[in-house]
Image (cartoon, rainbow, N blue to C red):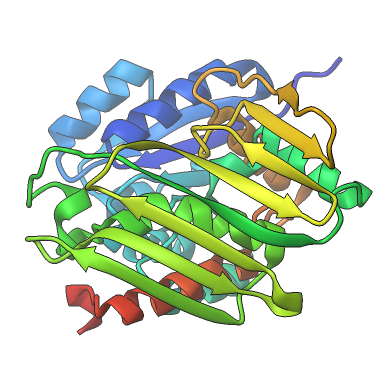
Length: 332
């Protein structure tokens, strides 16, 4: 068997998610993944990260990484408010991009990223890693089989209570903070995968001391009468799950919904059936393999996380934030 062609990754940012992705890339070396460069706000941080994870090149600016012609694809791991700027810089220099969720602050930014990538003919994808896990593949197979019948209700959510720090990205509106973009995006994206874009978006929530949303409930209405009832909170604790209620059966994605390894399927009056779908490592590997397969095949986007859907999900989030009266400083 021939050795797979190398795909050279750069990582933009050196925080927690950057380290997670670097670890996964190391685990995928036999599949051809190579971490070759890292860019940070300072040369010292970049060099520390490069030494830790074996990257050959360290850059003290994001722009320098974007200009590196030896990089095939850049993983963007900066705060949400910087995603569009960073992605556009990489795309302008011909780099493909895998951008951490949320893809952008809003649909306007996301659309600019998509248009730039299509004009430059480079691959672009939101790093909605959950979609590529085995449990979600099983959900799609169940839907395709018709055994569930039409979906009537999707319901789920969860909450966690982090320590308040107004400077932290989660609580800082200038960095794109708030529970909706951080955690709610998983639920909205899953509802989109199941039901498509909603016809109506209704939202209620609470803003915290720093001005970001700390608790949000969503009611999304779809064609043929389907609904999604979703919630996320930084003020209450509950491990997040999601349940699909269809005409003939229900499917529960057991917690945590962003990394599910178990489905509970209940059909009619039959006993519930538990199905397990183990995940290797952190779970970020499958999305990286998808990116590598796309680049080797000359594809410019992923069928499992299409760009039009990423933009549509952000339209839904924009409508929810409008209902809450929440605008980020960059949107004023």
